[in-house]
Image (cartoon, rainbow, N blue to C red; front, side):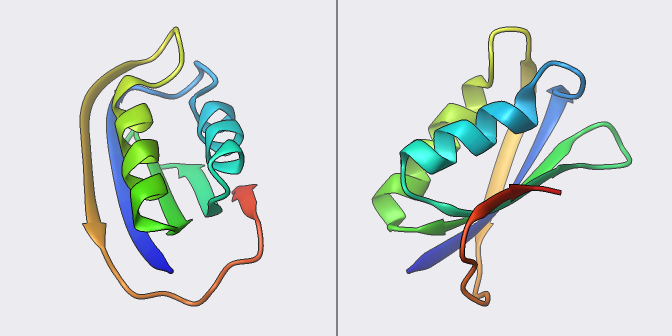
Length: 88
């Protein structure tokens, strides 16, 4: 199992971005979480198969219909196994 910590900026709050991430992550059989950040961005932790995390990161770069993603960065990291995908 791999884990990526993802940081997204742009017009990503108030446009269904977190729900989009949750729905897509579950379809890709990923666990983790997603939340808004105080600076107007979104942060997510994704766990699962590396190839599926890479697919998810590409989806994060696009976002839902109303989102305007300015930047999507990530770093691989170690973490405790999470049982499901949640919106925090």
